[in-house]
Image (cartoon, rainbow, N blue to C red; front, top):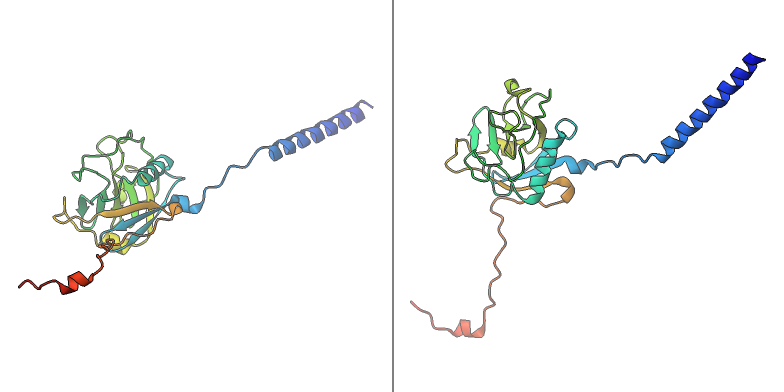
Amino acid sequence: MLRKFFLTFSALFLTSFAAQAQEAEVQTPAPASVPAEENILHLDLSTGGRVTIQLFADRAPNHVERIKTLTRRGFYDGLIFHRVIEGFMAQTGDPTGTGTGGSDLPDLKAEFGKFPHVRGVVSMARSQSEDSANSQFFIVFYPRFSLDGNYSAFGRVTSGMEYVDNITRGEPPLNPSRILQASIAADNKPPVLPGAQPRQSEAPITVDDLNAPINP
């Protein structure tokens, strides 16, 4: 009799617990999903076109957030690639163009991951301190695995690498290439092409202009 009572009590307890768990699961709202375009960076370069970069929000969330914040401020628009080494990388993100500048935001804690620095990887530049990344970043031309675990890789070029390859070399280059516009894909900004300037509207020609004397 006691065994039957115990089994009945256990069954009621488990049923009640399962119901409560199910109710809690239903009542807990699911986290809002982030659109894929929110983690795609576009760089319109003076070398001829748009570079698209997939951001690694899961690997380096703080660095990705910093890049997105500065991009939406327009911080990168017009900045030059101030350090470009053949066979290595192209570096930008310094408003002074000297390699010593940054943004007014605090430096970031390192987010060193295991993603290898292969061709097209975008990683944060820093000084000697591991926690000194701020706004400068570089794009790798060729694999440099010695950088793995020492620099915070936060993205990789998915299209337009040919425009990265055409960036003028030098430290600094004599005629540096630059970022014409940086944007997040979710903001739907149209590409800015090199030399694309708004046309000046010409004043209409009047009868007086046609009858004016011709000056030799």
